[in-house]
Structure formats: C-alpha cells, structure tokens
Length: 217
Ligand SMILES: *Cc1c(COP(=O)(O)O)cnc(C)c1O
Image (cartoon, rainbow, N blue to C red; front, side, top):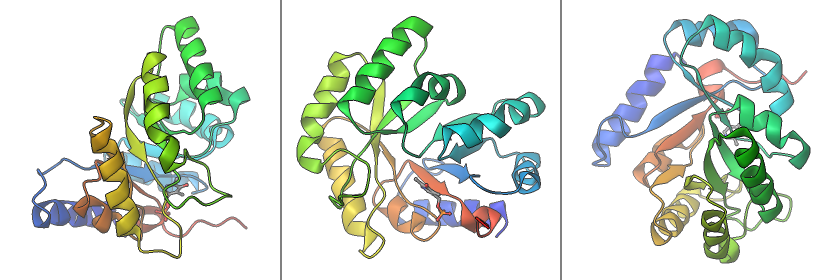
C-alpha cells in the first residue's frame, strides 16, 4: 500500500477520534525489507523509521543517513545490554526499555557520552511470559526509578497478544501512562493502528502495510 494511503488513513482516524491533525507520528518499520523499498519510501520524503535489531540497523542506516538528511531512527525491538552503547549512538528514540538493569546501563552510558536517546518503557500488557516488557504491576515503581536516574522517559509502548482484541491493551497502556504523567504512547501496527489512534497513540509502528510482507526466506 502506498505510503500516502497510510497517511490518509491516519488523518481520517485522527479526525474521527477527535484527535488533533498530525498528532500521530508514523514510524515506517523497515526491518528485513529490501533496501530498494526503504530507499523508495525515503525518496517519497518520509524520514521516520523503525528497526527491531541493532545489528541489522547498524548495517544499513549509517549509509542511508548520509544520503538522506534528517532521518529519525527508532529502536522498537528488545535491546541486549551488550549493545546498549551502539544502540544509543545509532537511534534517536528507544521504545524497548524493559528492565532495571538496562535503565542503569543507559544512565551510565548517557553520562559518559553526554547524550541519551528519548525513551519509551515497554509494558507487557498481556503479561505473556515469552514477551519483553515491564509487568503492569511493576510499572509505577519502574517509572520512578528511571526518573531518579535522570532518564528522558516520554511514554509507554506495548505489543498486545496476537490473539486478543488490542483495544483493551491500548486503553490499559493509555491509563498507565496518564497515571504516571507520561503523554506519549507507542502502540498500533499494520493490522490495528487505527484502533490505537482511537485510544490515543502518538506513535504508530507500521511495517508490512507500507513495504509489503517481510520475506524471512
Ligand atoms: C515488526 C514490528 C512492527 C511492525 O509490524 P507490521 O505488522 O509489519 O506493521 C511494529 N512493532 C514492532 C515492535 C515490531 O517488531
């Protein structure tokens, strides 16, 4: 689907939900996609992209950032502690802060580097054992801990369980963010970004609907 169709759908949903026009940021999730598809979207003028692996992003984005100015890069996948510094140099925004140890590592490296990406805390709203994210009951304490460390936390992120209605998870995330004085919400993917916008998403992460299905072959 052309990028402009996704942008139209976002604008329509913002209007329908009574949200301000342009209040939703579209993150084009370029993981695994062939380079020519990513370049095509850059050539259309889009500049906000998401990747879920540090290594993969490090392989393609330094070059693309030289060819295209003002790229804003978002890490949306789990971050291993040993890749923290590399991720903090490469990404403008990290959506997957999900444990105290990582928070402490980011705080330490931010002091050394004199720079810290903008951060979202990932919440495991479905309390799925295999999924990353802070458990809902631990969230308020973790937000306080991150603030004590001086981390630039701006919002919450979630990936709802595949077999459940996502709206309930989006609503829960919005409630937890409001309770903690956080005003940004990273939620909604190709199949449910309109429902996420209706619940207040400020960042939607859309991959296959823009680029086509990912070929992991
Ligand atoms: C891959 C991915 C997306 C995009 O998924 P699509 O269904 O292709 O839109 C969004 N968020 C995260 C965390 C992802 O890993």
